[in-house]
Image (cartoon, rainbow, N blue to C red; front, side, top):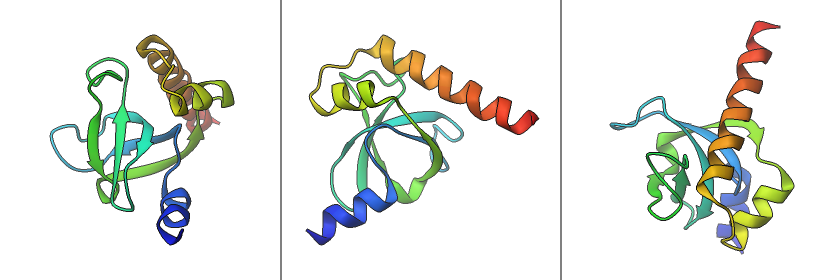
Amino acid sequence: MRKERYCLNKLQVGQLAVSTQGRDLGRYYLVIEILDEDFVRVSDGKKRPLSKPKKKNISHLQKINQQATEDLIHKLNVKRASDREVKEELNHLKEKINSDKLD
């Protein structure tokens, strides 16, 4: 029980995050699965498709206060999301961040 609460406070399925370490430094991802209190699986729908997500240490990710739509989160939880949906949502969330920075 404690593990789940810890993970959910850090990152959630559908959460936007940016890599802070590794070869993928600066790349934006959506969290698609929480493995344990230290690791998650992330995807960008392009270089890291849902069929081959990246296992990432949560200490190497920076949480962004943006989340995917409820519909996409549900699809991610039941493994019914497509790479196209992830790519489109990721682009939409990144545009939202950029427009917020301009304001």
